[in-house]
Image (cartoon, rainbow, N blue to C red; front, side):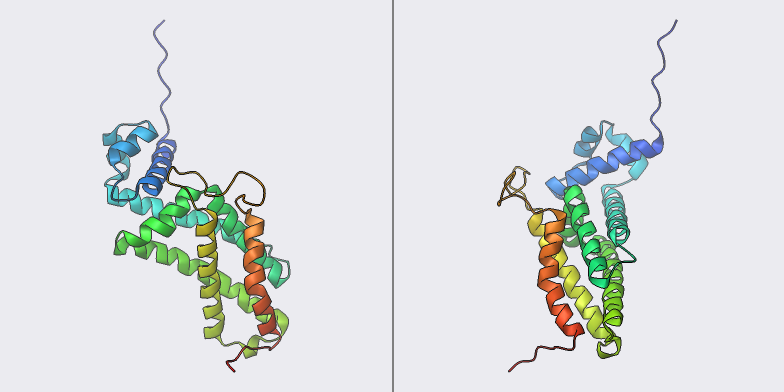
Length: 226
């Protein structure tokens, strides 16, 4: 009997392997320094196959940004406890955000560090993802204001501003929580007080920082300069 033929890998599986390799390479090497040879080797395929499936390095980077953006938005929206109180909804969404960025640090590095600095077309892709998250958070804050009975006292512009501020704070906190050393290891210790914060702990930190102020605002208590 002749040797059995090797099973052909489905295109979708092969593309996912190449995309995974690209995410890791772009995150750790940077867009400019990353090479298609390195991506192909990490994926276990030939460089011509990478070009055949995913065209140019620029197209591949755009595809990576889109995939990681969709995954992040989906993780945040899916994590929200829809029937819970407003603060619980916001906390659960933040927990989903921090959990996803912790589980996919390379994807987060591509979105937060690489894509924003490598050209306008890449930055536009990330801006669209961020705008979608801001719109979602704006809806949560607006719902909280309605729940507190002060929806008419907060202008749409102020609600939108609060959402932008909260998303920016979450991004900054995720960058801190996902900090790495030069060799790619976590900047935090493995356990104890110096360990990397969990998704819940990061969400708690931001809620303690932001929600206390939001809660006072919902009660009509506003800070004004002396």
